[in-house]
Image (cartoon, rainbow, N blue to C red; front, top):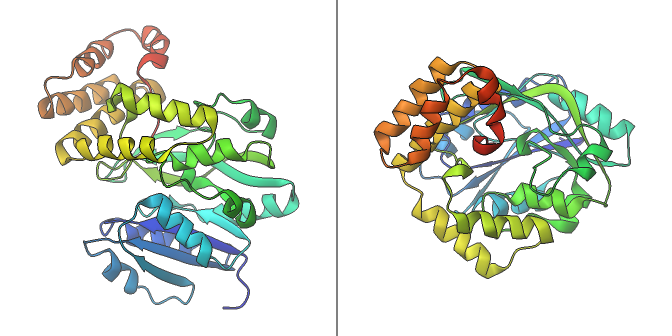
Length: 317
């Protein structure tokens, strides 16, 4: 391969059950001049075997010890051959024209450094849940967003490699390395969200990002401080990592997954019956969280009242 215009950068950790579908969706893009750079972050399942089953010269595999997604992304950026990087996750699905549309926009508008998009969301089994439309579309809207609101779906963006490499992903911003990066990039170039739905994002109980409503107060205090100041200390990063490890058990993550689905079926794609089904599954796993019972009660209220309570309970992937 000599003409690589886009590097599709995919970090992966233990995604053997989903990564084949993700890879296939990239290989079927209408835009052909890319490399798919996969950074295997110390997977212990059959991820590497699934990747090696694909015989396509555009796939490049980098192996590293388990250092986390931010370190995997920084490693991938160092090896990327293209000037433009399209981020993608190993359990999501790219729609066929994703790369073509984003490449056309960012090449036609050279003062833009990051371009995201809208996205469909699906559950772990691939069933449609709702469509997420970005909080901000234009550069002015993105620049004026509150620091607490993430402007992009990380897996949806294409960006200029040189601009991102000058900042890099902060390896202490555990679970919000992308959000902190967008804050640091404000003022360094224009940013935009295409209104088109260009991918499907999978909500997955085994993924690294947990519904943050389940995080303790200290986690939110550290995160908000980092986003407000644009930086995070090693000590705060270590504390975040400890909190994440304390909650990193299958029961907690599965319960958080069901609560997240319940909220989506209340506020994003109104179906209170499905919402109650998921809340009850979460309560069965953890019967001591009063907020889960509150969410169950809310699901019986009129839709207008439920919408008014959105800001209290809603949180993103």
